[in-house]
Image (tube, rainbow, N blue to C red):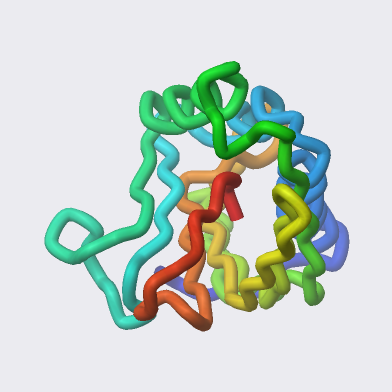
Length: 165
């Protein structure tokens, strides 16, 4: 991908997508969060920071639109006993960095270091990591084509994380 400099205005718009995505997750506005993804968009939580291909390597999650919908509906279900009472989460983000821009192809790649905190049943889980967003410009703004989350603890046994990170 050819790297190009983006204008400060475009950079702010790209960063706003990442910040809004985290806020929607924190506020559990999951339908709005899911709508940020392109129809072919995927959410990937690899089990190793060196992972290159989710079809050939272990992943904690690799969700396309259908699997995200299943996951969201499960979280809303009265049968999601791990969510009784309902948990909450919070994302603390560093400023998203635009690392690649292909203006001709309307494709952008951002990297954001974060600290994810989840509170459920009086227990707190904190997971540091880096989120990688591949965004596509469309007439209405930007859509997520890929969100890859590399956790610092990716290669270790993770606690049961109920929400999208």
